[in-house]
Structures are given as C-alpha cells and as structure tokens.
Image 1 (cartoon, rainbow, N blue to C red):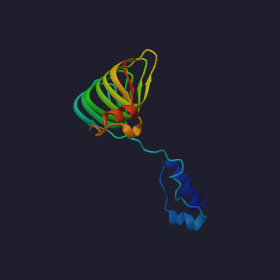
Image 2: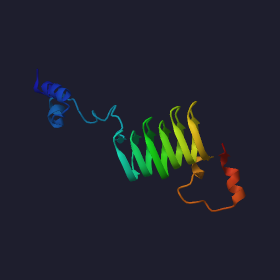
Image 3: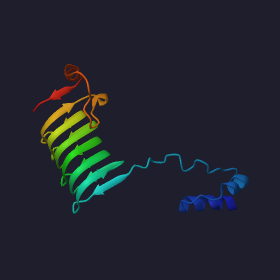
Length: 172
C-alpha cells in the first residue's frame, strides 16, 4: 500500500485530515471540501432538566427544551416545554413554541404555537399559527396575526380600526 493510500485510510478511521499537499501530489486526490459535503447544520440544544428550577431571564439560540421549572422571561428561537415542564413567564418571545407541560403568562410566537394533548396554556398569546391538539387546554386571550403584524414588545401606532382589519382575533 502506498503512503498516500495509508494516509487516506488513517484519515477515515480517525477522522483526521492528512496533509492535503502530500496527498494531492502523490495520488491526485484532494480532501478540500470533503468534510463540508453532507455536514449537518450545528443547532444549539439546551435542556433544563427535571431537577432544575430557574428564576430570571433566559436567552437561547437554537432549541431549548424545558423539563424543569422556569420563572421569568424567555427569549429564543424554538422552545419546547416537555410534559413535566412548568413555565411562568411575564414575557416570552420566540419563533416557535411547543407546549406539552404547563405554561402561564404572555407569549409572542412569530411562527407557531403548538399545544400538545398533555399541554396547558393560560395567559395572553400572540402568534401566527396556532395548533391545539385534542386534549390540549388553552385558557388565554389569543391574537393570531400575520408575521409582519406581530408585536415586538412595543405597541404599533396607528388607527384602531385599521388594526382590527389586519388581525384575526379569537376569543374563547
């Protein structure tokens, strides 16, 4: 076996990258871009486990899974409250939220809010898409809007009649 072939085998076995210049000269094979093909996007994953109780503000990028208790504010991309999770929040701003546990407070979801069959949501909800599975409980003031009309925490200025025309409001 030639040295270049041994280097290729070693690189595959141990995940290392041999000297590209040596391989290209001896075998004509290039590793450039090899590890980019099929590479999965790195998405942050954070988990608040059953035994954890957090009080305060949480800022998260990527996916946040809550199995414990959170008292405070949450700002993030994707938040999942597991069946054992409990969240009490005065202000939650996310892209997507899935509730399988208990959520109490105010939430703004720019994409979707999903309440699973085991989930309970109470308070004030503002979202683009709302999905409540059979068995899920929703006791909230709900406003469903197009994504461009979602609040960013500040009230939009303008005519009250115009605002009513651009939003769909569901009262349960």
